[in-house]
Length: 394
Image (cartoon, rainbow, N blue to C red; front, side, top):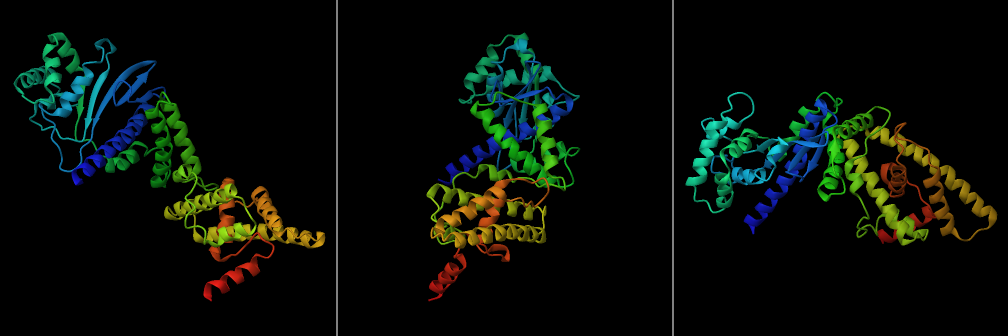
């Protein structure tokens, strides 16, 4: 079971590595020409096109545990060769093997590293000798395909291969991303990278699912500009985790003060879980800002004061009208107070941060008694809170 779990974890890290490395690569291409298009799982793990034609194909190999060695007999190498032998030679694309494994300086594969010192002829001879001598059953059919190529086909294939060994592992890719975007990121680089990764996660999922055909360097530059804008002083970034919060599990919320208050005004089930979702989003967002020191506790306290002032105006007006009109449907009045605040709240934590779900969630936090402020919806909520406290202590 432990071995199987380790294998699953390694496979998952491999997918993470592929997706994040694609972002690193796209950053490099976007700086060169924003018209570059990136595809995932097209002709290869990562594919770059320019002017409608593929120019780079990348095979990615990620290893966990003890540092691996890439040799002339490695399964990784022959698996990549098998994929590349299917690529039409007339496409004239660069075939890149990006691996976390290490190629020894004296290895015959060292001649395929990028830069000077490439020795394609020697590597072809070594590959052909290894293909004939090896008895590895996993690579047998792939090696035979290589043997069956004619001389010009083998030369054309191997001449296009570039091996980039000792590539960063998945946990190290934040450093690679920071380096790739060092000229774009504002001072708070850590938050910038988190925002960019949040955008990229959605893009990568769409690429792998096939709902998005390709992403361009222009798309990346636009996302970078948006992330930079979110970190300006007059606004705040939205935590990428917020976008993943759907319908919350309401179990365990029944005893929360803000939920009890919503039940006192007979809020229907759909609106109840949406209120819980707003609360959860707001809490998650505040935690994100505080974790990265984007806001202070004092700033949030001042914002809570403004929200309390808005609530007080609406609550007093609605309660006075209820008494004046002799209304007995106090639960409906409570719903009207809630609706008015959701619709009319104008308080802003920052001038350009206008996410209405955050204000709604903050109102529920105040109804929960957080931030040293207490609000409510039912016209007699204070009496009900006192009764609830008595019941809890009796």
